Image (cartoon, rainbow, N blue to C red; front, top):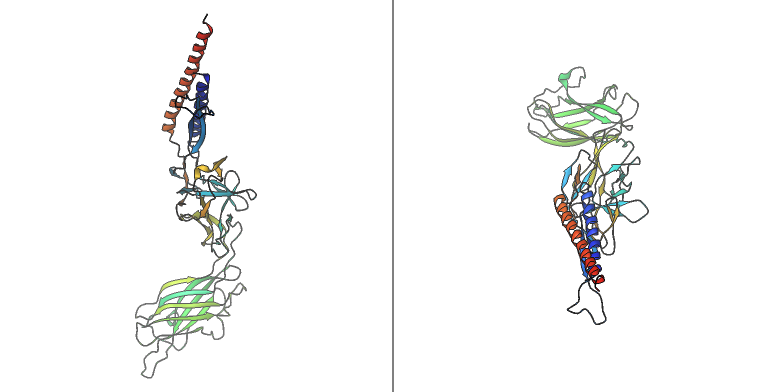
Length: 413
């Protein structure tokens, strides 16, 4: 018996207590993973090889292995908080060094619109173009728009309606007499993004066929708010013609051109698409109404969907994808090298990262407004700490016993 065994046991127990203490310290650290100290016995080497009667000379720490099991997910009030339910890692970059990887989804937006973590590193993913199409390929730091979203002038109006077949046709429309027409209004946008109220008028003509039956023709007129009717007399945009039968359905398109507006800013050529216009013996009714334009808008909020797509919402009521988070996974995550700030670096042992978007393979899916808790089992760690403390005391006792044996030898006469 020598001091070596007891000394190595003390060192091992001390390191084990340090690992356990680190686990306990990070029990409330989002995205943190528990570690386990792994030991191996030690034998003296000899030219003749290790015999069956060799006595070991203690123990040695061979690894501190992190356990990448899924942590619990807790909800927050911050839509920029992201939790991964799966094996993936967020990829973070400083723009200079190779990416680092993390499970901590505590993100915020800097003044330039980049999504960053508490270490000021940028989240990587696929950026979207101005139309909201995700540009897959090389991952880049995700950046949210910080300025106004450009307005879009209206170039199409989609209208579905029923025109009353029982309405009596007249030779001409009289805009002062609502009995001679049916009308509806729609807000459209000019080239500057300003709203223009456009009113559409539908006038049933008194045209009849050879049998004296109404031909079911309706002339279309339009007028912008505060502006005069185009033409003198006002010109019709076109004519809706129904085939014979009260329940006929038509789909037609007309172009709205040269519509005066009070602001002086012209509106673009607008295509009026009449989708499933009916002529039933029922009162006039609009069944659907839409248009393609919108005003300029400021970013108001961002929500990340389970597939990693970041949806931006603007003050003009529009929403559009602005990017998609890219995740990475490893064949051997225990080979990752901890770098601090809840991040890891890839190594030869971990393998090269396998990248994809949330929902691919075992990468997992994202949950917005949530964070992954540490997977540390606090109760288990406290039990482990008591055990490690007892082992430390036991190894100290072996050194004390060895000291007593040596003292006995010294006192021999």
